[in-house]
Every structure is written in structure tokens, then in C-alpha cells.
Length: 182
Image 1 (cartoon, one colour):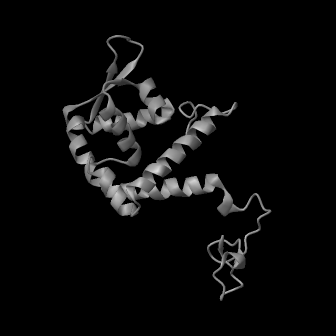
Image 2 (image 1 turned 180 degrees about the vertical axis):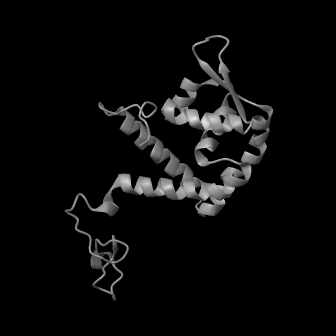
């Protein structure tokens, strides 16, 4: 609830009206109002936050999707493409070009898994492992750029994790690792 747009002298809860931030009265009965959509808030938040990463990752020679791949590999390397695909919730067709660019940059190698020739293993190179030290500066830089307390971000992360789990638990939920990005 925002202060009543029509009552400039009143700051009490009795004098409130449900309005959007620009002061326009909100139609509480309209289920399709854009600013009330969770999907819209998630989409705008994702684009806006990812844009904050761009100038931080650029000196490392990484895009945000490449950074996510590297995060997964810093957790464990080697990993199969299938395992990476699942961890990143990306379909293999989307993941493959990312891996190709990271391999061209000398940060990882792709090769047949010795234990299972059908599986493609992705392994960090020495340069890929060394990049981790520089990447450790990324999280605090993003927190500083956001200007939001770490505790608030941890709460948000928890809430988003619950939303992801709830969405994945729906009976007709698609597997994000099998859905191509459009």
C-alpha cells in the first residue's frame, strides 16, 4: 500500500489507497496488471542484476552465462556435459556454444570420458583454475553495486530457491535443462 494519492495531508494507514509507484490507482480486481505479475518482476530483476555483472566480468573475459559455467566447474572438475547441463538448468544445445567459447579462450578442455566413451568430459585448464582467484572478487563487487545488505540477498536467494522448487514440483513442469532458450 502506498500513501493515498488523493490525500496529500494524510500519512496514516486509514488514508491509504492501493496505487502503483507513479501514483496511479491500482485496480485490485485486475489479475493481469503488469506490475502485479511475479513473472514480470522476476524477469526484470534477472535482466537488471545480470547487467550489473557485465562490467565486473568483462575484464576477466567472461559473459554472465560463461561465468555460471565456470562457477559449476570450480565446484567440481571434470564434469560431464550432461551433469553441467543439469547443474546449470541449460539444455545441451545452449551449453555447447558456451563450452566451445571457453575452450577457445583456454579455460577448459572437452574430451571423451575415459570411464564412459559415450560421455563428454569438461575439465578446467590451469588457466581456468587460476581465474578462480580473480573471480572471488565478483560476489563482493556485485553486493556493493546492488547496495543491498548480504542478509537481504540471502533471504531473497532462499525465497527464489523455494519458488524454483515449487515451479519444478508442478505436475506439468518442463525440465529446464531440456528446454531450449528461445
